[in-house]
Image 1 (cartoon, one colour):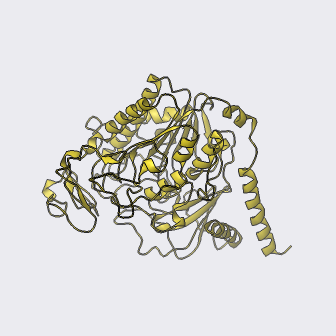
Image 2: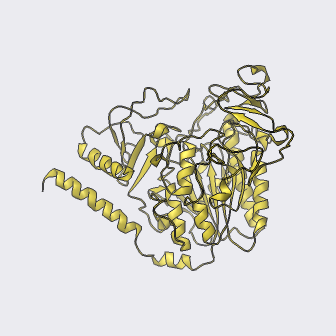
Image 3: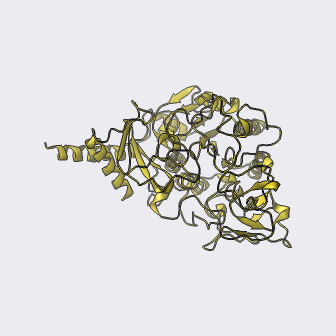
Length: 516
């Protein structure tokens, strides 16, 4: 058999094996789990939390509540977000489709129209059809409203309620973008109709001071790109006027989201719940509540990690108060890897000490290297999952949709959620192998593919003009193909593409096939 035929045979057989794995019949453990009362599902989705930011993953900032989740369930050491930036990861998590399949799904501005349109298959829609009361509380950053964007002074639709959520209480984009208001279901919270909101990401509106014009009014100095309207002493991306009575106080994010979670848990007592609890921590601006400020040696970033851990502890307390802790499946993860200076001078790099949020991996947020998409991933379900497990299985967040559809015996539109695979056995610790490959997306849509053997291929890209703003992170972009064997070289130091052209060809062919 010639070498080309051997390569093609290997490629076809590996794809066939993946299809067979995804269609395999239920194991006895799966049959047992499917007969128990439906568990509540709490998906804690954090922001910019690196693989090394959590104590049980080697972090120096104490995170006892998050560590307890892992100790009571499964700590995954080989799990990935789909993207090294937030909007694409969130899109893929909810839709089961890679965000790069269509243009316009990059990091969204604060006034973007809804990226997930009504009729699109989603994870909350699957859970809703399965009989769950569904909610999202926290950061959204997936756009709102019709083609012209949201009407901040009227009914904001479409949004979360049109794609499968029964309840939503969100910040529209990120803490560093206007408008700095909460949106509950279809309306801005506490908005005074006599003081309408106006938002622009193109030119200044209103007379609020800006970071460029009035630096003396800042309590948090900007470093790059965050020099527009000042609200709460912090200059943001974009301009905003009006809405004075609706403005948030950054320090209250965690308390506000927990208050709304308690309200959500009271809404529907007859159905199990599915809640996406989407924290703002530890995204910039890092402004934790006053009771957490100065509690760590790592500055505001470390204090935000401490607040995040406290939030997890408070969520556990809420479940225990209602007797729900045993039959609630909890997933804890992050939307992408860590970043230090992401627009504000908060001394995140200078005050790291021994804490390594990158866990000695190369890259970070925005990057094609591992620290961009390799994230903490913890699953706890006391009623069904044995405590104290560690899983090295390859897992992608994009598989949550198909996995929960399988578990709840709910049909879903596979033509839309085209990239989601059923990996319920991996998620619950029964399968120790997981996926055959994961696709990773860096900033500007640069793609990589990692297989279960540990070989990672990064597609060529001219990176000379793509270093994001002033962020001190390697993008990983070169004009030459890159290949790393992560099991031998987890830091992606030695590019072995020239010496292993056969593996490069296999992975490139597979990636091209996935793209088609």
